[in-house]
Amino acid sequence: MALILHNTLTRRREQFKPENPERVTMYVCGPTVYNFAHIGNARPPVVFDVLARLLRRTYQLVYVRNVTDVDDKINAAAEDEGIGINELTNRYLDAYHDDMTLLGVLPPDIEPKVTEHIPEIISLIERLIKSGYAYVAEGHVLFSVTSFGSYGMLSGRDQEELIAGARVEIAPYKKNPADFVLWKPSHKDGVGWDSSWGYGRPGWHVECSAMVEAHLGNTIDIHGGGLDLVFPHHENETAQSTCAHEGETYCRYWVHNGLINIESEKMSKSLGNVLLVKDLLMQAPGEVVRLGLLTAHYRQPLDWSSAVLEDAHQKLDRMYGALREAGITGAQLDQPNIPPPLKVVEALEDDLNSPKALAEIFHLAREINRETDEKKREELAEAMRSGGWLLGLLQADPESWFIKARSSDLLDEDAINILIKSRESARKSGDYSEADRIRDELGSSGVIIEDSASGTRWRRTR
Image (cartoon, rainbow, N blue to C red; front, side, top):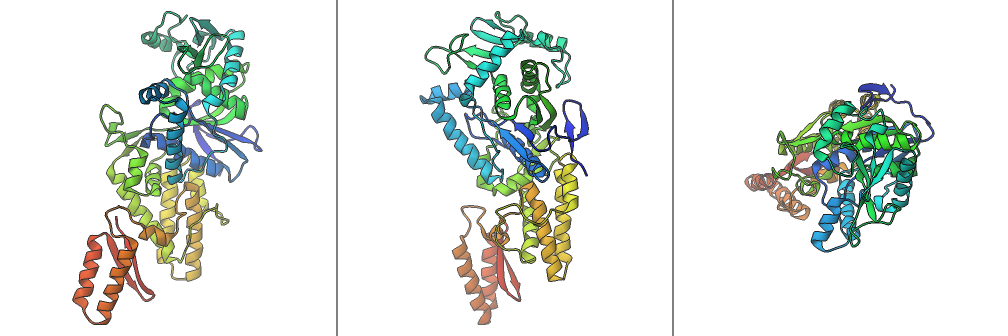
């Protein structure tokens, strides 16, 4: 089956056909690093990590995910703390990388920063001015929306309606209220760079266009990001890049993930329901959070609640339990050599249908548990693990999965093993009431005992 993706530009599902199969290009809008990442920020990197893993099975992929390290919010946060923007952005970029690593997100091939591409940004703006698509006004450089007849095509909005709706942003230096900023002036002691229009800093939209051009070329295969970026960010990217490249197509497939609600409400600071990834990672392993993000189709909204984590944890327990029963040991650090199950691949090639792919993996877990032939059971487990890799799951050591503490207030591994040895001694001496008491004590601490012919094993339930 060929890869099918829903293209936001055409509003339909399309077979993916790269412009150059020897060099497939994908760009995803990355973090603006002025604070810790929240759960909504985590969905795009997880979704497009799955897509990157899938694409690499067939193509040579160049995957770029940018970092916005200059922004008015960044400037304000740095000023509040009395530090430079580099110190602030490096702190939060390190935290972002830590979060993504724990979520199993593989690093992109290239991770460009805005501050490292100011010359490219200025060059792109100069070309837009020269070709009549942009103009200088009171230290600002603005893109003229009416100069690009296809403006609004990506978001499906009528240009006249967009212009009328932009009147709330009217400024005296704009020729048209919908025109957007490519460059804005900075105070002489503020964050900025010299340009022929004066000391200033880039607008948000032009940054991505310049970094795409610098690392991937004029036309890219896939551009990803959250649904909230379709307008105005990606609409403006399309306009300025198309005009800067004399009408060349900017992006062939636009792929957008749905947004996350918290307990059926929009996540916002005003509601006090912003869930930081680092806090969720204190509640559950990163793999649990990742599975929670993949339980809904990427294009659909995801309603996040405490039940999502609990359900994801239970599902991973069942899957790792099947791997352990099949005798799988050790962590899988690299991509497995065994091909993933065809049905898992087909599910993901069907517009990244992760719920269907997960259902296929659960089916394999059930087959493993029913299979009595040891060799066949191991083969099924290896196939299951290979399918899990495409989703960024099931790569930990199965035994370690069950013995790692899920909460800081639970018994540690040494204490558990001491109690298990005491229980074994009680059983041998015929003191079954003491053995039952120890079992109950462990159970109250979230530890389940499993007696078998090969000895006693244990696993955590929380």
